[in-house]
Image (cartoon, rainbow, N blue to C red; front, side):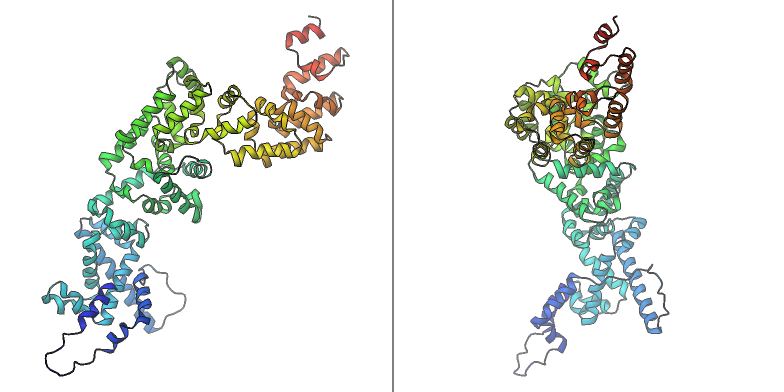
Length: 579
């Protein structure tokens, strides 16, 4: 260890005044000063030898007598080291139960102290190591047992970290990271930090059933978030990347034993957040804006910088700005929309809608008010009033975290005017939360490569913008292939898409197949009829197609699908029933 190496300089006594040559230094001291041995010494310092645990599994084969003695000795050393660490923790204010629990779960810290003790034992340097403590204790240190030596070694180190290093290791933090974090948080005191870690684990990991939601939010954030990456966002993404790299990935984000150590390594300042003055007020406020207590953990783990935000100085100003710019609507209009979300509730406060948005995209709380205002101004430029904006933002709050300018330029390149873009935004706000390169352009290129004329695309998107959200491999390709397998040509399918673009949104099994079978087998019409009138697939088979076909069949009337289905009930009855 560094202490042993530094002590080597003290081994050489000052030169005597007489001309008598000094005695040669010990062979051990000569060897330890050689440069080629320094890397070995450094490796020993960087990689402490782990102490065997008391609960090691029993070996299958019968050990020799020497091995049994050595194993017993090492197990005894581990027990002694654990007891020494527990004693140190009690001296720093930990309760006996907490001290014992922490010491039992800090094997790396125990191994580090044990390595230091063994090194001083091997080199016979206890006298020099203890000289800084007091001359009266030099002989005493050399004669102490292993456990007491570990205790004094730990006491010297804990003067700096105040027992926080073993606490952090017991929480799962790597020893190397624990030693870096401890100096920044040790001023809070060991008892306070013990309680704080327990409180953080309780609020973040006590609710079961939301692990899937937490991992989904994290994956969605990593894939689609496009706001500038400030320090908070970078730390969050770094935290997610660490989780993604381990076994189980982001699916383990809601499991405290796995994710809590990475959380502390990424956000060590969490340990400085007071329970009464910071954490509890934050929890109360999140409940106040409509986030149920069991869902709070999913919000905080999806964007941990929220935990570091001050309710009064950071969060409330952002929310007030959002309410002012986004939720300025009459209560009648607001509650009309709110009833769609909560049918059993007559009147809801605006805070509820805010809570809905926060549950899905909690990093909105980390979005600056300036950015929110700029997005609202952009929507206003499109002609979208604040009244219209409420359902848009509530259904897709991630809009406030994106760069809608890119989407607007994308539609502008497709020759869609502002009025059309505004209608698309109100109808399908999810489109504006999509990636231009990875989602929108891929759908457009797919249609062009299939054979849809480029000049038809604006009409297709204007009539059915949801097409841009359909998955190519799971939705578009299977439906196009089904139509081709039924005997239609590419030209026929392109014509149907152009004339009725919602066609690609219909299920094969529930819509396309039964209606085509009825058209071909029962109505005895050719496929060409569906090509000429693709809107045929939009009508209900049981509610419109079959009843009207029966009427026409009973009167032996043969007509086109357009004449049969396009008329409303009154016109149909007037023309074919004489009513």
